[in-house]
Length: 448
Image (cartoon, rainbow, N blue to C red; front, side):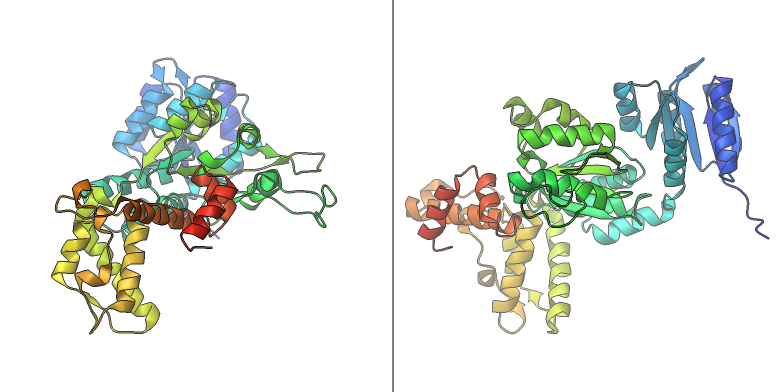
């Protein structure tokens, strides 16, 4: 016989009918409920009892649900709080998510959605396991990284859409994975997609799936990325590269929480948390009318900025040691050491490609070095990005402008190709080049 205590849920609502509906539904889920009619009663119960979840109405006789969210954030930040709002009060729901709410429900409350939300909240990892896992995966003790880990810890406990901004190679996908893995959806799929690498004519099929015979080549039914991520997280990398026509369809899928496959007649309900990222300035893209403002507000409920490697130079040594240990393990060779001058060179380099570039530099140096010692010359760092204070080199030091510009062009094109898995069409789009112009440059630089 199972005698383990039932998990306790706090319900805060001044409407008796709503409280009764929630109490009955949660009781059938074998949960113990405590009810409060206002903020004051809720605070008193929070003082006496330990809860696994709090469900609160937005409008209460002596205050608001937002005040209760803020109170819980200060007292017990790992207690998930779900806000109940009037139908259509999207702005209220977004404010609640920004304040730290786990998720929100709209009135009239749909019982399947309620049960789904409660089950998800109760799957949250314990507070002790969160920080340790994040520290193990996200290296660095600099203040920017300490702040980033703290934000990931908080966002993992929410279902809010998150816009992850940062330069190419700074680790945006790793941050997205950590948010997913430390949250209640960890056991469900994490589906990353590079929006810039999908040909525009295939986007709708890739995102929403297609039915057999819906177009030439559709020889069988195929689920899309939304269906693949059902119950989990869909990570839209380089979301700024989506064409406007696809942005409209994505917005509708997010709003309706349902998708219709190409050639399909009925919509399929999907439960997906959306995380997105781009190295572009998304707000500037909105101003330039290349990105829909309504989609921007849907995706950018909370913005999380990943610092560049230049902003956390103190972490370079720890990152380098970690990469060298991994390389030694992967190759079965003794671990290489960094000569002090090589380490100094790394610390003085601007790293336009961030952590990804650091890994590439060390992998090359690991192969080229003699006697398992990496010298400064083994790093082969671009002189244009080296200086004592991390600033760009003075233009007067450049002997040949054409050679310098060609090296910059080569570096940018290689970076775009690597980020798009050598999809030339996608790389051209990322660099705002026509495919013909891209092909010409590849031939000129000997990269074809």
